[in-house]
Image (cartoon, rainbow, N blue to C red):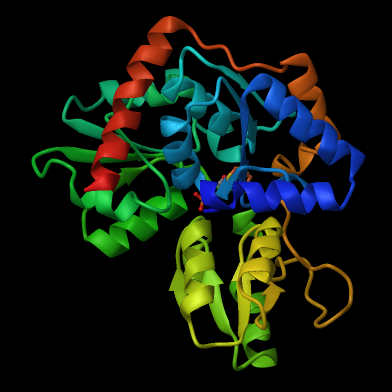
Length: 332
Ligand code: 13P
Ligand code: SF4
């Protein structure tokens, strides 16, 4: 995650470039006393105006401690909702209200509530990629950065129910040895990575390390040198002696990797339907939801203070409990 200490150099750098849109955003940020939080999958120009760029865990931690009055969340809708849950009294805006997530869509709150009724001993663990209404039904939230730690800390006498990502859930079961009932949801972007395409990359770049996000299928995770959250991917690439990495996640992350790991080469993994290697064409995976955000929309949401996240009081209150539990266990 980009630390607050880097905020000024980032701002200065963008100003130096005299990008009028970036300048407008910096002016609005001052006027509103706003903070701009951006996920690692955002387009480079959004990352470059953000105060913090990170994974879901880092962004939630930043949202929990910000003193800004307005939070501009450049990611997808459930992330902005998470910031609102942690800051019920603040204004939270996002560039595009339609920036959803296939995992969130896969798990409607009513269906989860019905499943929970089938076993009163369920302890429900929700991946942060779900709606506020789903969070409000859960015992604890996890991200890909802390899921193993949090599942290890789950009560031993309860039956674990993990929603909504069956692939992350399966990986966490492998890591912890704890059986869990898995909700049948997935990230539509990550399941496009397939074994055959990754094997081709390995053959073509034998000295490259393969770094995989745990939302990917097991057939792909099994080929990895490292399986981790987007933030840990960046840390891994920084510290590993290898000079070349095949990155199996959304391509937006390459921007930070190139900036923070000078002298190293990052190759976007191909998705299963793009098998000609190598070409000069982009063969990377993009999340269509993350990519709805543009710099113009960031400026507009700050100007209009809309679209704005609003949630019913009861959901805000109930969803805060598992979020706080997550932050507390993460900090141990
Ligand atoms: P992390 O950044 O937490 O690894 O999550 C990836 C993701 O898909 C977010 O939607
Ligand atoms: Fe959801 Fe996948 Fe996009 Fe992340 S990359 S926001 S999990 S659809």
